[in-house]
Structure formats: C-alpha cells, structure tokens
Image 1 (cartoon, rainbow, N blue to C red):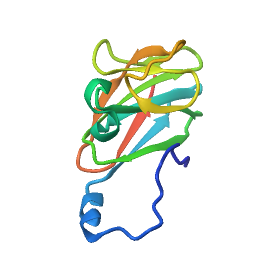
Image 2: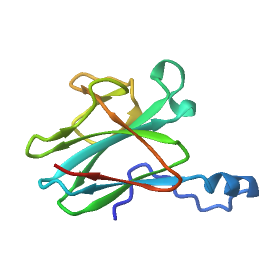
Image 3: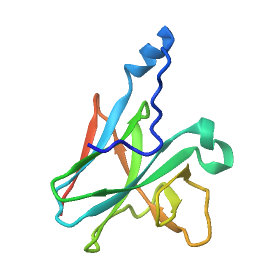
Image 4: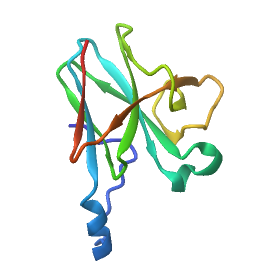
Length: 140
C-alpha cells in the first residue's frame, strides 16, 4: 500500500475528545481492475483550509495504480469525496457536471479553485461512504 502525500502523522498524544472524532474516520482506497495504469486525483471537504471563495474542498493527486494494485489515498471524516481518473490508454472516469478542480500535470495538494497557467479544469465523480471504509474498484 502507498501512503498518501500530505498525510499528517502525529507523534504527540491526542486529547481524549479527539479519540471520539477518530472513531468516525473512514479510509478511501482505489483498486485498478481496468487494465492499463490509471492515474487518479481526489477532492474532499476542508472548510478550514479552503473555505469561502475557494469552494471548501482540497484537491490532491496524482496517484498511479498498476493493474490489480490498490492504493490508500485518504483518511477522512467526510461522508462524500470526489475523484477523477484517467488511464494510460485514454479511459476516463469523470462526470458531466458537479464539483470541478484546477489540476496540474504533476503532484498537487491545494484548494480546488487554485488555478495556475497550464492547469486543466476537470469534473469529478462523487462517492459517498456507507458505514465503513470505501474501496473504489475502477473497471472497464
């Protein structure tokens, strides 16, 4: 399994009230059952870092996933996350409308509305967590 970029590992003890919050954290993973290598990025709510005009969501990416591989990308308390994926052979997982993000070609971790010259604006698919962790299996 790969660890996600920007994941915060805390070494100091957590206050007791934080342990109650952790009970609601869920893990998001992606699995490639498609064929060729798939590249994904995600977005998830973060009103503290990206509130107001920035849309309230952080976008992170790109993770490359080989055939039959799985990658861990996020631990969150959010009930809905968004993703966009594209395969080396041209396959894409997108939506016709919804949350979009400005996305550079290389790794990134920023608010969805932070656009730079050369970025692409891509529309993401929503995924809602059930009662536990979520693995999105990308298939043909």
